[in-house]
Length: 285
Length: 246
Image 1 (tube, one colour):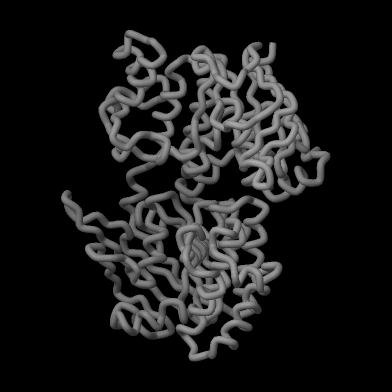
Image 2 (cartoon, rainbow over the protein chains, first blue to last red):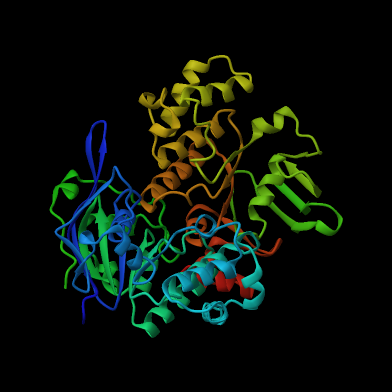
């Protein structure tokens, strides 16, 4: 399997009044043409890892790594201008809530066409047909009406599909999806995931899927990194997630209520300080 | 006796051609000490039912009676001593510039209690926070701790019926387990009645005795948890929900 992205010893640091806070502490992993899940609680550093790859951490936050290489090119050595060509075109990112990521005063059509024309020198009419095709690909009925509509006229599920369409239209090699479905209903969640799955397979993309939902990740991904306090504590095959060994992963799994196994009390996670001390497990292949 | 009885409840927003019927002809009852769940996708009207009970949704018709008393357009003071609500987002439901002590103290004095000091301490102990949290502000608390404060505030007037609007959906799974355990314990200790809204069937299955499945404003099915566990839902929509949550 060819390696698209190679991250070695990634640190994200934020200086505070009480010293430097390390949000991500020495994380290493590789991504091929696969679906890689990153799970953990809030504050475990999973979103920061995603953002750090695209160098979206704002000062005074600092990103340090031995290298973050995209097919051999080190992203950390690029200028801001070169980075702009990477963002969107080669690596793109879907955020959690479509309400906050779409421009409220631009029609959806204009936004998708802008995304396409920014990276290709296509004419407006070509961009229009492309955008309509893309909206159809994410199962939006009546794409021509949607092109004319504004974000507030869309439901959450439609908004998220529009975001996915917009992120995929420049045909990136890697898609980073940061909790793409947690603002959506269960039934809509499935649809959005199916669409993402199909597109990733068809285009041979690499997908980094960040989520706090263990069941979803074990269903949807190929490989899973489990993060705790800025480090990777365990790496496993997604379908074997339920056989995970690390007490943290076990604790998370056991704290979920289950329909098929009723219990009077749910298990509460007992945190062991040793977990955050132990060195990061490598997620490289 | 039934703690809550709802008959033919309609709730709507807007006027004439802008009218949206959020809840259509909902009928159900909850016995004293029971825990009842409302599930459905967003926009199905489950939260609107809770808001209509507390008086936060203005336009409604039908009958709502709590603890044997039928509710009118205006709620009496005794109503708020019987019914309290816990909201979804603990980041939005606490005043950012009021300390925990102020939040609980204000609620207590509004309900006419005089021994505030002892009661605030007791409430904090009951929800597992303890005294060291008493003078903290919301930004100094984690999501789970905030939700505990919101639960303490709802318990302050010593209510009989607690309305829970997705109390754990903004929290991590590990914290969710702690809050759900707390809610189970409180119900056991105080003999509370719960009406709980959630989109997560496994949470409702853990917490409730019976549940109603809602779709576009209507209750399509009422079933008990044993039936839910055996996947014996009748209505195609509830079956679909069950499949999606397994």
